[in-house]
Length: 206
Image 1 (cartoon, rainbow, N blue to C red):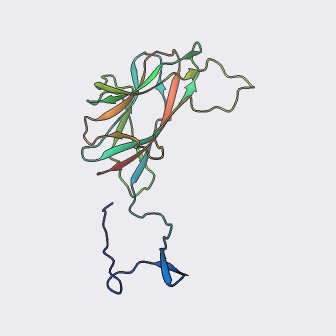
Image 2: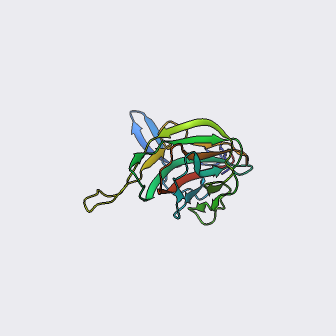
Image 3: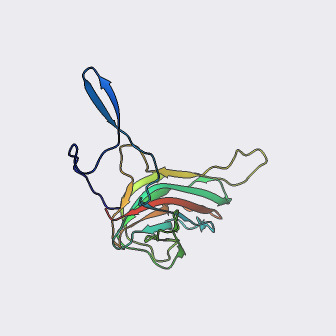
């Protein structure tokens, strides 16, 4: 989306849409704004691996996301869902790392644009057999992995949520470049467990 500006000169050129009110001897102008969907807004996508990733092997990269060559990726939200029970209930130590090289040999997950006229540039995969190089630790969590389901279990929720879409704060940014990414790592293994992800991202040139 290209940025632009206009110069406003009274009685000349382009006009601003205003509502007027007389206050004392002065006519006051309040600019009117029309709320509408931006037709050239940010390209947004989801990364969802409904097949899931095994948590059995400790220190695996359950999911990696890599930026495209020329676009920044802004990660808005990460949800992790448990889709298969573990052998023994536990707190699975989980970490979110930056990557400085891409992993290879995993199962590709194709980002899906929320607007079908957009073409996502980011790439993703689960469980790379050759992991990418870990950089800075961004976040840490210890989600509870369930062993059994019973008739009285509460409505199932994500076992982990990282929300980076907060007022007055930048989201998690992956710089442009195919060597730049993030990985979700299960520091401790959880035998027989499987997790699936939904990740919301935006891609921009700025």
